[in-house]
Image 1 (cartoon, rainbow, N blue to C red):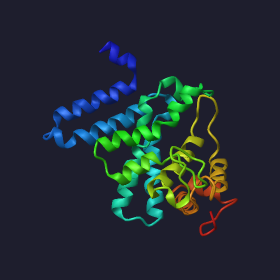
Image 2: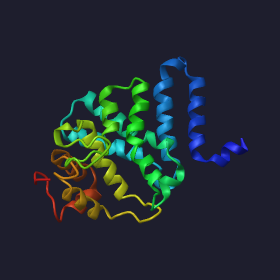
Image 3: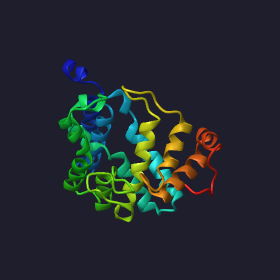
Length: 231
């Protein structure tokens, strides 16, 4: 037990998941989603600056999908993909997650996390749309992203949403090498990325959701964006 405690919150998350499974009436039924969920929590817990990251990305992605008018099933899919988008980071060295400057091998390992996460979910029989959303969450609207260099309509719809929200949450969160950006500055960068880094319709939906649901977001947007304005 002492050794487990030394490992920190990541191990605690996985241990809690296993305890939950022993209490379940039908462990087989809950095994796959609960273990994958535990993996996502464990990845977030590996570094202080990523704590809660995937939960926030999930919430903002669901809100954005609802603003886009997606039906309940697609909103559910984007929520799952957002929650699990960084699961491949569990196989990257922890030091690579907290360093400002990466060695070439570390950078390549980080760049492969989307591909690896998609492979994990594929072999766990997750919905193909969810798998594609995880694989594509670092693609860019202009084709300069990875791992497949997709552009515009080639990018899966779920990936377009998660790609934007993931970047926004990273900007407004502290990192070991920089402080969090103010909300207004982060939102301005989202607007500037419309049509280059991000899908324009997703930018508009994300900003509309922040305006409608987040008083701080509305105050930050008021000086340079209004609902119905082009993203």
